[in-house]
Length: 300
Image 1 (cartoon, rainbow, N blue to C red):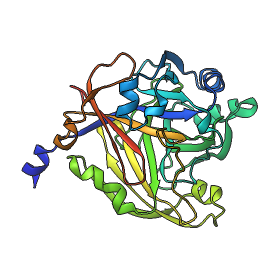
Image 2 (tube, rainbow, N blue to C red):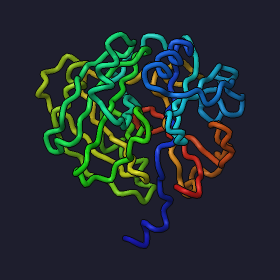
Image 3 (cartoon, helix red, strand yellow):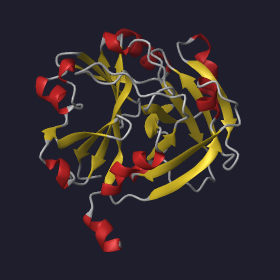
Image 4 (cartoon, rainbow, N blue to C red):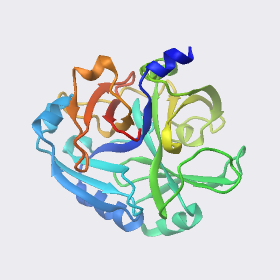
């Protein structure tokens, strides 16, 4: 079994999260002013890249790439399209949450009073790990963001906050079939934490369910103290409506480093369109319609 795992490629850390949004100016103002993120690039989507994303209609759309003040090469990529208007995270299948590691979650919460970020879960210490404090927020384009402060003594391998608001270190996808969500990751040698059921207040809140409702979720462990969380969404959640040729509204794609592209996707090989990176890459569709981008990296 160990030998078989060694033959499979291994997913590295999260490198980018891609959102479609109706207005790049609103995003830039919010993320640079309140999160301290910096503009990395302003571009237009090349035709060949749009095709590799299974979204030819986003060719030539304007993009904005942002990075944390720390300078870490972990990005937020926003693509402007009117079709993204009205998206609400946590109510449809696919990618739904970006979780950031931060240095002081309570100070960040206090700074949001006059911001476009709406707190839906105030800073709270986790029951099992009281040295970890987290809050949940809805951003200016309906995106759900978690902000997490990891204090000393957790003994967990989690990415550190190298700036006041650091990198995305956890991404969350949801769907109606948890086992199916995990299937794409069986092609990789990464360790998986089996699903458990816990009360996830924000999922219940957004979907008008009792706060004590249990939701099943599990983890795929990545390099660099980063994680993929996969959630089984309640039956009231629906498939995300996506116009033909476009990316899904809202959180559409996550990019991961990988030591080598899986053989079954190598035929689709492209070059990554990400902050001057020219590494071999490929994109495939997960069980809930989420796009998964892999980018070869020597430090995966």
